[in-house]
Amino acid sequence: MSILKQKKVINKMIENGGCVSSAMRDAEYSKAYARNPHKLLATKTFQALLDKYLPDNLLAKKHRELLDAKKVISANIFPDGKDGKPVNDFIEVEDNITQGKMVELGYKVKRKLIEQVEQTTVPEDLDNLSEEELRAKIREIDKKLKGTARGKDKTADAVDDKKGK
Image (cartoon, rainbow, N blue to C red; front, side, top):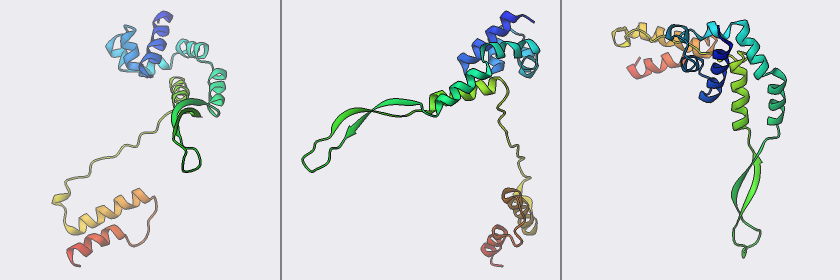
């Protein structure tokens, strides 16, 4: 595997915001290999390049700098008193967004920040369920959402109330 291609992938990832598959295609890896970016990310040579070009100490330093990041914005300042006219001025405010995104990107590229994606399934056609099956399904979903059984289910009871039971 060419180190030059891997360097190109890192540069393209920085340009495109971290999309490894797209960066791999831009670096002229095969489409099949680009569909499996985890294979490239897991190689020792790619990890060594990341350590060289995006070392942990730089990420940590930038992360620390974020705590005091500032930006200058335009503001209308209203002086005290009735006669004071607003004055346009520039003030310094905290700006963690831009640098925070770059630190997050660095951690993602190094696979030290993994986003959890909750996968849900679409329930079966609810129109075909009986009222009792519908109430049971509501209780089941409610328990999953709340994380605990609450005894009597208020959502299912609301269905009963609407049906006049």
